[in-house]
Length: 311
Image 1 (cartoon, helix red, strand yellow):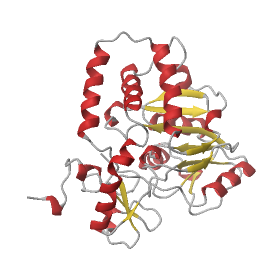
Image 2 (tube, helix red, strand yellow):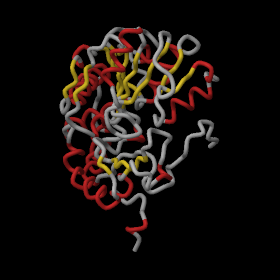
Image 3 (cartoon, one colour):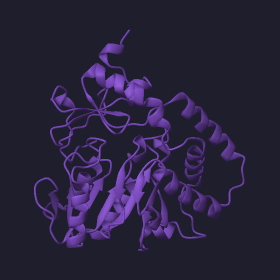
Image 4 (tube, helix red, strand yellow):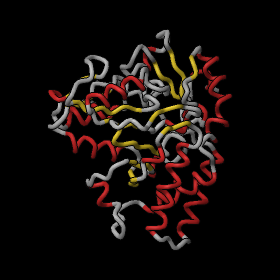
């Protein structure tokens, strides 16, 4: 695949990329649910409503997310990525896109594919201005921690009427965040189960809004329409019902600490990640703030092997 973003592709490296941990207990339960789904009669409307309500509450159950209850307009999303695409379509050629260095490569890929280079600026290189639109991962993709000065950034976006999309893809890899979602600038929140459960191939996510705004995603989620993946919703709902939102964190925190001690890293708030602030692992730089991010998931489940594990 052509790398039009110019960002490094680290997926072939032992600690590169960011992946779910293929925990045997989680994988076995997923298999059981797939078999169960094939033998059940599903009411699409009941499933969708229960999925959306359960996901929002489950996602916030281990954090203090002020104002989350106001985001009661929900759509099934194929991971978080589908929601991003529609966000860009809404503001393309209307707003200047702002993302931070080290974000999910998909954002820069869309900027390049849509030819939006003149309507884009790194958050790190220019101040926020009226006419901008901001997409920010929370926790931040380059560190798994809350982005520096997040509250100040959201206040500034309120002041300048800058629409904000918060990406919560990593939020259930961590616990005990305090985030104020009552800011008027926040228009969208999305999350997915692709990092916390071995469900990345099923593309299970959600998009939340406070105010209804019709677009392609809202249409295909309409009652009686349901051009969405019912099996994925079923898997996601019942995985969440079986495993609390802090299950992965509680079961892998000790392993994260040991791995970080072994490699000389600082543990991220997100349990699958370790951070190098001393440039010992510069090959894992994703272009962010003097941070090299290492993901342990594929070492833990042995889909990748580092030098210390070889027989």
